[in-house]
Amino acid sequence: MEFKQRNLIAAASITALLILVVVLGVSVGPTRTFFVIAAADGAVILGIIIWVLFQIAVSRRHRMFVQNHLALEGEELRIEYSFLRKVAGLPAKFRYEELEAATDNFRALIGRGASASVFKGILYDGTPVAVKRIEEAEHGEREFRAEVMAIANVHHVNLVRLLGYCCVPGGPRFLVYEFVQNGALDGWIFPRRVNHDGGECCLPWALRYRVAIDVARALAYLHHDCRSRVLHLDVKPENILLDENFRARVSDFGLSKLMGRDESRVVTTIRGTRGYLAPEWLLERGVTEKSDIYSYGMVVLELVGGRRNVLLVGDGDKSDRKWSYFPRIVDGKVREGKVMEVVDERLMEEGGVEEREVRTLVNVGLCCIQEKARLRPSMAEVVDMLEGRVPVDVPPETEMIMVDLLSIDQQSGVAARRLESGCPSSSSCAITVSVLSGR
Image 1 (cartoon, rainbow, N blue to C red):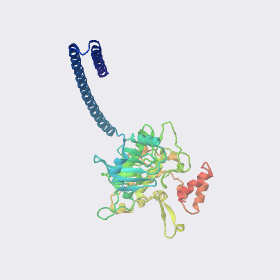
Image 2 (image 1 turned 90 degrees about the vertical axis):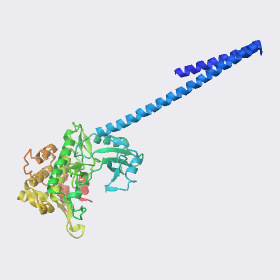
Image 3 (image 1 turned 120 degrees about the vertical axis):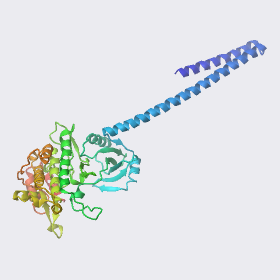
């Protein structure tokens, strides 16, 4: 403002001097006195012009200095803010071009689901990441970001950390997670993975027991130690990752829900994986943290047996095959006193399986899959049981009508009749039976 005022004064002075020259020229004519005064005026005007140009140059230099200083401060603030975001664990917003470069144009595919694909990538700073590309998003961008921020504020050693996200207008959405080296649990407990020597990868018993504890701790944190309870709602071996030390990390919060402390249940549509869904969810009665506990119990039994809880067994066409429901087999062996017969045969060949730990895991698993939600323990109680602070009793018998729901023969009709008394409508029962029977 001061610079502008000085320029106005200089312009006014030059104008006054010019007017003076004109007035003298008119009044006295082209005399010697006129030329002397005109020369003096010209010198003064030239001096004023030089002074103004000097002031402009000084002002421009000062402005450039201020701009450079502000830019430097802005860069320092950006770096500091980025550092603080990393320290606090807050998610960063990535540009699509960054993720495209990190994943080599999304060529390194490491996993695929019904509506998402996962790619391995390396960020510009050398950080290995797993980039999840969500093809079909049910929520808008605002809801997507709200869920990202909610999950990003959840930090636990047994939860996969969310590093950032990316929203493409009118296109897919991306979640950027830390990369977990040894992949998903299912490849280590089910007969499938082959190691570099050509042999089959089989997670030893001691590590399986520790995985059960790690997952229990993660879910206990989500259910009890967060400001708002977080329901994962998709606990299964595919969503449990193993790091370089084979410690478990629970991942994939795509179906998770936040539950206020004053809420008793959350009503949501059926979204999950067959074989891990709790009965109350399928009966459309709303879900609670006990629904996660049911899924956890199913995972525990699969850890012990090294097989899927729900298998279609038998030879021939589909009509001649039957569903095998592992929890019912386990329950029968426990009551017969033959619990070691349900342990993964590969582990029995290797040895080192402690019967006490097998009984603990099996009883915990059976307690967690009780069909009445109120009979299931909390995840905090499960952690105490697994770590030996609380005794584990043989769970009460349960009807296990889930095996009927999973049947593909005439038992489906029996299941529907059993469910009608508890379903809000017959149509919802029919939907439930269809979903579970795979039709």
